[in-house]
Image (cartoon, rainbow, N blue to C red; front, side, top):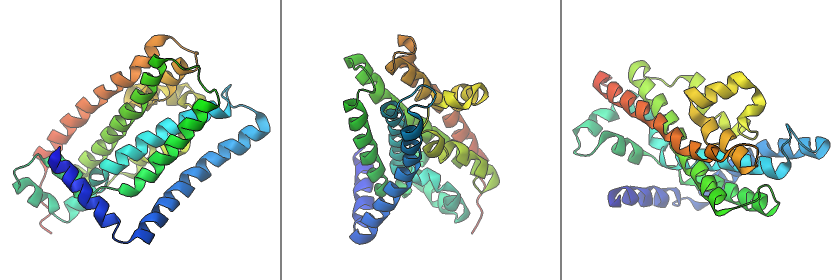
Length: 257
């Protein structure tokens, strides 16, 4: 952990070398996600609710997804850029070092500018909580924290799967962006609003619904209390992700470039 924090401090200092660029990048990320959610604000200003969900509830919904994706991208940027690591034969050098391979890949690149989106998600959460989106109890507060943290874990797993695919293709598969970047767009609504087939995929294949749709039903008093345990269940997704990583490492052949 000490070594990881050392790498994190290096990346933060590197990003802050050109402070104007850093803050403009943060502003750009904020404007993108703000623009996504403004469409929800304008829609509900006209219709009042979508699928029975009010604006404070949808704000809470989107804040969970935004916080999860942003935390994962802050610390898993090295995995997201794994195709470049392979194509430039940097993985050969990584394999020679006496540290876990995945740890070194994570330390290759980090994205401190994503903390701006985490801050934006926190502001949206505070507003949603103050607007009466949920009748809060200590248990519901814990469930909300689990949704965000486990959501970051699930997105980390998705990034890891994308990295593992590049062991075999040397390039990222664009279709996986549906689960990597897509949730920042369609995560502004509970996943159940898109229909049963989509909900089944996001429950049993890529368990994003376990950290968003189903726990939200518990928070909004629309489902049983055991829905609040589903964020923890979603972490089972990391097991096949880890096994796929090990398979990819065994399959690895240097590009020699």
